[in-house]
Length: 177
Image 1 (tube, rainbow, N blue to C red):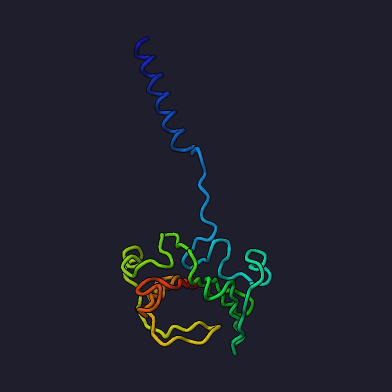
Image 2 (image 1 turned 90 degrees about the vertical axis):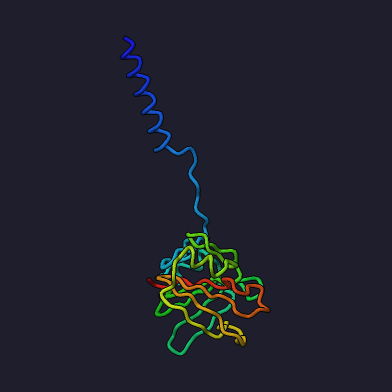
């Protein structure tokens, strides 16, 4: 009788532990604007058509620019308050980026993270380059930024000591992997 009681108690304990592991009491919702390298930002994905797929999600864009090869750059927001931008070529989003907005990658890196933090989380970049900081919709600035290239994602690190993001991430680009 005592063996049966112990066996029932152990069985009940096992079932209790199994239920607590497999049946969460709450379901955490992901941040709707999380950046996924090589994929997109929240529900906006590389490969989407801006007018058909993105506008219903983000609303109408605030500015755009057409390049000689037919690529269109769409932007939601502005330089002073921050923005999201998408390059679309032949009806498909090929690259997107965020600047001056509180957006986080799925690994926790965000606008304002330091270069050391990026390297700590993502490892050594595939390559490091510099580029004049040019906003494709406004006149270029004069100092080069450091670009840390990873598979599916690119981080712009500000090098202008007058910039609020000096030596920090000022822009995150999502690229095809």
